[in-house]
Length: 114
Length: 114
Image 1 (tube, chains in turn blue, yellow):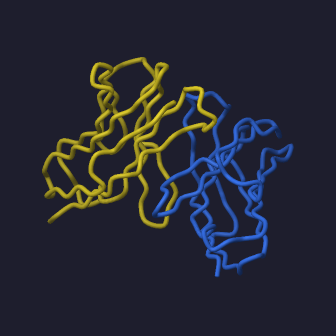
Image 2 (image 1 turned 60 degrees about the horizontal axis):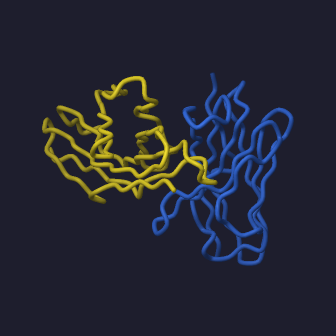
């Protein structure tokens, strides 16, 4: 089975712009979660989607949003980019939304905001 | 609320020596516990997970971890370190009422000396 794929892998944007990141989960997985990884804050949960519905949301401003499509692919959008949004954004998929399910991570999208 | 504390942001051991990475958790409900490894410029890969089936959990690459409820610990060990074990290791907990799907520790960078 193919793993979790994320596109693009690298992205450079300027402050005030918006960005959309894409994640394709492992085939058959219905849950997709997004995380932000920074040297200062570590790994922080952004949100989870299951069957096209947002199940959980972390403590991030409304500029961060996401959605999931009927094929379980997910997109994450950040509007009005700030310098502090520079990070590695990781997507993870799992079979379902239960807490004990293993999450399989993609390689991440590295976003640099100038 | 759930939380995870990883003691030691950086651990250095000699090749062939015992690897011990410490993780303590806090949870008001029986937790699910995970260890993930992250190699440079990659996503996270699951090493092992505890889901209450057995307190000693064996994972990939010779790693294992023991769940000790009385000590609220889930330390990761490997009897003999290999150069390829150099990476960042994250302990994580899930299963509580927190809005976050999973909570990660701050990570421990493992270095292997020849």
